[in-house]
Picture 1: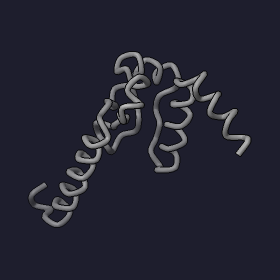
Picture 2: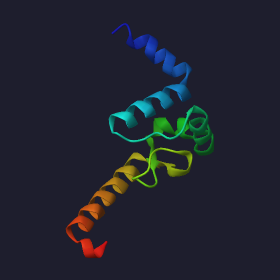
Picture 3: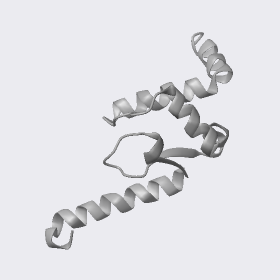
Picture 4: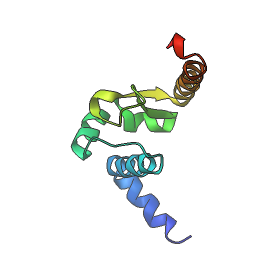
Length: 103
């Protein structure tokens, strides 16, 4: 438990670096390629206001799900928007799999 306080303080002092590390770790767990380095992630945050949006439940979304995380393939979405998009894509892919002539 004592370790959590220094980690929380580090995250509070370094929100961009903390978000970048967490993002890369989470993508690696899901087997998704991360194509941007810290500088590009910082550019994305500056363009979208991502770090400021985090407390309001915003996420980084890959526009094309078959590609990795990169500056050109990412956007910010609210959690409900991201979940809806994921549900639609899963349903569409399931339909295409069941009806190959429709795809």
